[in-house]
Image (cartoon, rainbow, N blue to C red; front, side, top):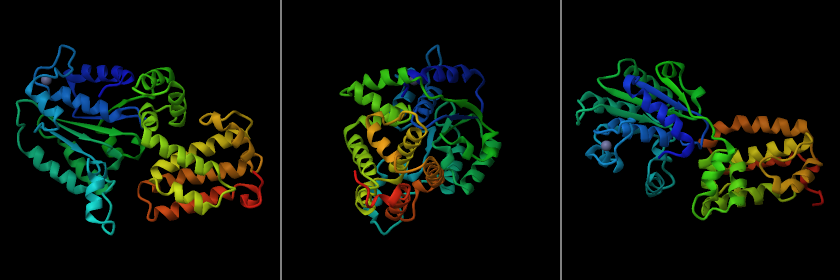
Length: 345
Ligand SMILES: [Zn+2]
């Protein structure tokens, strides 16, 4: 899928068709449509009668298979947990069993070997998309390296990453990089507010809470996520007066990778208020933030923000999600004088 703000990057990619590198790295912030862009470009590369601008025709047999996720010369490597139905399958296996992996594992890269060993089913090339490439664990990255060093035949690798700094330099150096920037706020807002059933005021608030990333904002304005987001934010905002245990009852029902970034932006806004600025992401909660600011210091909040930043790596696979949540919220509560216990509202 191509969004208005990814069109210039698509055009850039289509212009590269004439002298296509073996591996491309599409990188940029999360929530701007990198994977959608890579997927669209993969379709264009597999199309058997591309348009004059290099884009897919949308009507040939190859385009049809690709649209149905059925093209024999296309492979997508993604963490098992990102695959459709992963949640259900994991649930069916029972809670005692391991959760679906958030890594791309060596078995997946090895399976690619079989795919690459045979010639293309159709006359053209093969396309391998790896998203997110930073999910490749070390053995998987090492196994991939061999393939990237000697790419078999007419194969194109499209790597997608929101954390390109986490990629092994040996992988990065074998890719031609294309950065997908954060869209201009006005452009993102126009797209978001133009979506069905989205209220423009809500769109603005969501975009702010999502740090300007339109796809994250879109997820927030969709009813179930929007409700979850509100509930978590409310529980966070009621600390330190409310018991941590009670806040954790709400917060820990959501994955850490949802509530941790939310707490991060909340604390960033608290820091802004302490520094005398206006809240950036939560202007509608300015009064609450000002009251919280009166009970803490910039040093404490800055220290906590740094600590929280270091925990983000754990958010993908916490050993004990409930414990991580309680520990984090206790540390947050301790930022405030008297730990909130005797503080009047
Ligand atoms: Zn086509």
